[in-house]
Image (tube, rainbow, N blue to C red):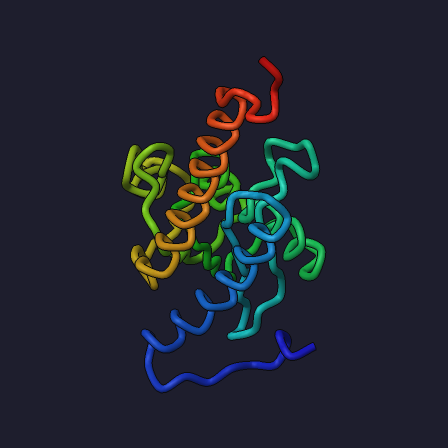
Length: 180
């Protein structure tokens, strides 16, 4: 599996873009499944060891966010739920649930793309990672490939709104073939 091959990068920005591009691939899988397009990858020693994308609708599991899927898979690969040498790349700012799981897993670093002004728990609504009283500190990098990550979400929700509007118009429109 090519994910397991160590990568080398000319600079830290290229590294972050490489792993965020992999998270965007996962987001596309979520979108293809009818889920909100959010994807995540867990990196250990410059290798992607786990991938995840949103699956709460399909799995009927409110905890099946991309981050949670990737963390569960990484724990299986490592044989431990604690991952202090790992990093998580995710296309959308983690929510409170995912931020809590990241902190409990003791990840070293989180990189996210788009901010989430409604439920973001890495600075947008609250910042769980800035709580100095917690027993573990995870560093956060914000805005990596934010335009691409945000555009995917805007396109998804725009298409969903258009489809809902079209469905309402069809329901409200009289049947053109009706007899008088």
